[in-house]
Each structure stands twice: as structure tokens, then as C-alpha cells.
Image 1: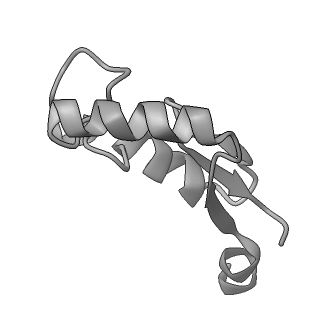
Image 2: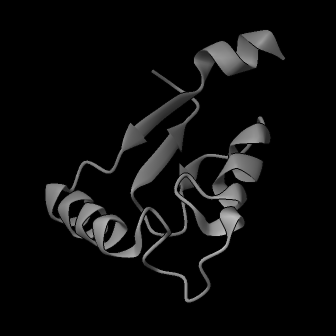
Length: 74
């Protein structure tokens, strides 16, 4: 498991326009995912859904709002 975690990389979306848009939304919502209607702790960035996904050693992909990307490679 530790070896898998060492290989895991969390990066921002390479599309700067997406990053800027989501960051502006996070400012407007006080840190809650701007893609979600409910402002709950589960939807505070980095959301619980993505935390659960990155805990899966086989998951590779974007979070719900596409701000973060989990890669299994460097």
C-alpha cells in the first residue's frame, strides 16, 4: 500500500482556464465545491467524494469539478 501511495500524484488540472474558474467559484462559495448545490462538509474542497476516490489504489482521474487529477504515474 505505501508503495502505491508513493506513486500516486495529485495535480491541478493542466487547463488553467478550468483552474481559474473553479478557484473563483471556491472563493464565492467559501471553499465549497462550486459544482454542488449543498454546502456541507462533504462538499468542502477537497471534497469527500474525491478523498474516497483517491483512497482507491486503482482510481485515476479527476475530482467532480475537475480541479484536481489523481495520476498513478509520475
